[in-house]
Image (cartoon, rainbow, N blue to C red; front, side, top):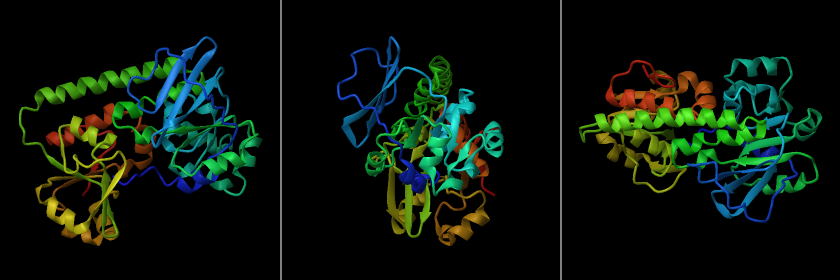
Length: 352
C-alpha cells in the first residue's frame, strides 16, 4: 500500500531534528535483548536504566545508541503512531509537541492541544526548533524517512535528543508493535509497555493459530491492496508487515512474491491483466465508491471494482494512532473480511 504515513514528510524533514544525538561508538553489551521481534530496535537493561540501539534499515552498520537513565518529561512525537503508543501507556502528559493536530484521535490529546499544553508544530512551521526549546522538549521521536543528517548536524549542541523510529520498515506486525517498548523506556514506563505488548502478542498469536487451524481449504480470497496514483498502482511489497498480516489473516495477496518491505509500483495495464483473479480490494484510500470514482475515475474499469472493497478511511485518525500497536485488532478485522463473516470491525468498513 502506498506508504500512508500521514504526510508528515515535509514537517519531518524540516524538524528531524534536534540535536544532541548521543551515539555510543562501542557495541552494546552482550546482554539479553528485550525485543524479540524487531529487526531494527534493541533494548538492553543496565543497572541505572537502559541502552537503546536503533538500526537504520539502510545503514545497519551505523546504529544509533542511546543511554537512557531517566524518563523524559517532555517528548515531541512526529507521527500519529508515536502519539498512539504513548497514549496506550497513559503518558499523554509527557507529549510536548505533535506534528499536526488534525490527525489526532485520542480525546485527551485533543483537549491538551486545545488548552495549548501541547504544541501543534503544523501551526508553528516558521519556528519549530525555537518552540521546542521554549516548551521544554527533551527528546524528539521521528519516522526516519531519510535526508535528516544535515538537519541534525545543524542542531548539534542543543539539549534535544533526536531518536528515529523505523517501525514502518518492520517485516511483521508484531515487530512493528514492539516499538511500544521504546516509548516505555522514554517515558519511564517500560514494565507497563512490556505488559501491553505481551497482551497484544498473546491475542495475535492465538488468533493466528485459530485461523490456520480453521482454514481447511486452499481456496483463499485473492486480495489486492493499495490504490491508483495517476496510471500507477501503489501497493505493499511482499516482505512488508502488511503482506505478512494478509497471510496471517488467511488471504492470498496478489503481490506476495514481490521483494521489498516498502511500496511497489505497477502499471495500470499490469493491474488490469493480473487483477482478473482478485475478489477483494483493500485500502483504496477512499471511504465510499462515489468518492473513489471522483478521485480515480479509471477505477470503474478495474476487474475487481464490483467486488468487495474495504478501507479504514471511515476512521482514518483512529487507524493511524492505534493500528500499529494493535495488530491483534487488525488481524481480527481482516480474518472476518476473509471469511465473509463480518460481525465487529475495529478499523475497516465496507465501501458502499
